[in-house]
Image (cartoon, rainbow, N blue to C red):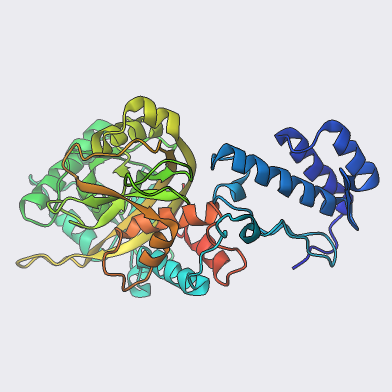
Length: 440
C-alpha cells in the first residue's frame, strides 16, 4: 500500500510540475515544495504529502465551483469524487473524505468484488472461443497477408460455392500453418485488384445469402486488411465478414450527463454521473429489444472514425452534428474474438463463424436540456441510468441486459472514470481481458 524504493526526488519534481501546469500551485509555491517540502502553512514528513494535501483541497474546491465539470487531464475527477492519494514510504496520505463534505462516495455500496466478477463474466461472454475450435482454425491469406480466420467447415463451404464453374476460393497446401492446416485463399479467377476481388467474393456471399446461410444483409462494405491502417485487399459485405473471420471495426459512444443542476426527468436534480441507454428496436435482425449504447455503428470503408461518429449520432439519436463534434472525444479501444455457432436449415454443413472485432470508444458529453430521440428506426427509446444501475446490470442473470459487446465499452468507461477501485481483486484481469482480440 506504499511505494518503496522509488527515487522520491524525481517523483516529487514530476508531481510539482504537473500541479503547476494545471493550476493548483503557483511557481513560488512550487519552489517552496522542492526546497522545504511544504505548501502554504501545511507540512508533512515528505514534500509529496504536502503537495497531496494542498492539491486535493484545491481540486475539490475547483470541482465544487465547476459544478461537476470535467477537470482536463485528471481522470479521478471524472467520477465526481477523489480517490485516495498514496504516499511514498510507510505513510499513507488520503485526501479529505468526501463523506464529510457531503459529496457522493467514489464507490457505491454495491459489492465491488461481485461487480468485478460479473464484469469478467461479461467480457468472457464476448471472447467465447472453445479450444477445439481455435486449434482447427484455417487462416485466410491473400498475397501473403493473413486477413482472417475460418473453421474448416466454413472454408470448405466457401471453396465449393460459386455462381459459375470457376471457384473463387481454394485451399492452398503449400502454405501450411504450424497446426498442420492449409490456408484458405483466392483463386486466380478473383483477379489481382481490390475491385476484382471484391466482386468475386461478393458473388459467393450473395449466393450463400440466397441459400439462407448468411442472414441480416446490410448493403454495407467493410475493408478486409491485416490492420486498421493497412490498405484493404478487398471489401466485403458486413454480414459476410464473419465467414472470413476478418477484422471488423466499429465506433461505440458513451452518452454522458455530468453531475450538475440540470434535471433528468423534470423533477429530480442530477447528483451523479448518468449515462444515456438505448432500447433497440424489436425489428432488429440481431439482439432485438435489448439495451444498447446511445450510439454505436460499424466502421464502413471510406469513412473516417469521427465522421462515422457524427453520422451515427445524427441518424440514431438525433444528435446535431455540431453537438456531436463538440461533445465527442476518443478515449481508447477494446477488442474481442468470438466463435458464433450457426444452425443452418437443410443439408448445409456449417458449424460457426469467427468475429474478430475492434471497437473505438468515444465519450459524448451532452447538455442536460438535450434528450436523444429515435430517428432511423433502429432504436425504440432512450433513458438515463446512474452508475449503480449500470453496475447492477453486469450481473449475468440480470433481467434486462445490455447488448453483449456494449458491456465491454461500458466497463472500459467505469475503469477510466474511477467508478471501480483498482484495489478490488480482479481489476487487472478486467483491464487485460478488455483487449483479448487482435488490436491492430
